[in-house]
Structure formats: structure tokens, C-alpha cells
Length: 157
Figure (cartoon, rainbow, N blue to C red):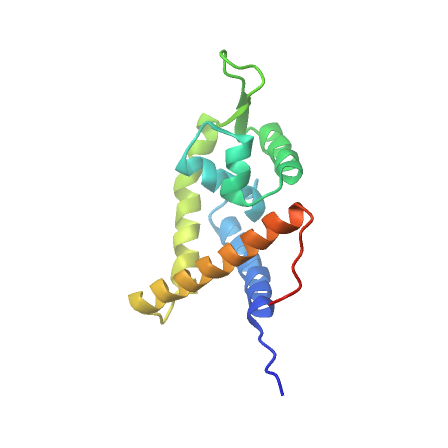
């Protein structure tokens, strides 16, 4: 009898549960104006501000249409600005506002709380091995995403 592997199922459960905990932690740090998904966008911008929508899409793994809607909301609430460089009016850069930059410290504290929670009871070698496995899984999924977006879907394992 074939063993049914549960990796994807467990990842999904971890994602749902960690999102709920993360949202509660955001509230405990008085960060109520953004949700965890918007936080992912802001986190990417805190790593490197003034980037294109294309680059932000790659960093967050969000589709451009989803990202655009989320950017609209973040712009409405004063967290980001869309800037048009004078040398290329077709290109749009996403920048953080000064007010949003102040949120970074509190958000980083929440992120550190989550990291401590995730890796409670793990040693450094286990963490490195786990993250390497997760990178491999992500790479496998990313390759499949690229192939299926081109209409190629291989059903062979």
C-alpha cells in the first residue's frame, strides 16, 4: 500500500494557523491598518524601496492583478506611493511613505516573535536543513508554475 504523503496538507494548515496568529500579533503591537498579506508587500519594500511592480511581484510571489489591487489599497491608506521616473513615464516605481517607515520596527518585532514560535525546539542545523527543503519544494512549484503558465503540464512524476 502506497503511503499518502501529507507535506502539502501540512503546509496549508501551517499557513492558515500562522496567518491567524500573525494577525493577532499585529493587533497586539497596535498594527491594525494592514493585514498579513499587505504586510508581505511592505516587508519586501522595507528590504528595498522604490522598485517596479514586476520586481515586487517576484519578491512577494503575488500575481500582478492581485498585487495591483493590494497596492491600490495601500496607496489609499497612505502606506505607499506610485512614482513615475522622469526618464521613463511608462515605468512605475513603488515607494514607501515616511509614515509607513515608522511601522517597520513594530512589524519586525512581530516577525521575530513568529520566527521564535516557528523554530521553538529546533537547533540551527535543523533550521538550516528544514529551510533548504522548503526552498527545494518552492523551486519545484515555481518550475511547475512557469511550465503551466505556458500551457505545458507534465503528468509524469
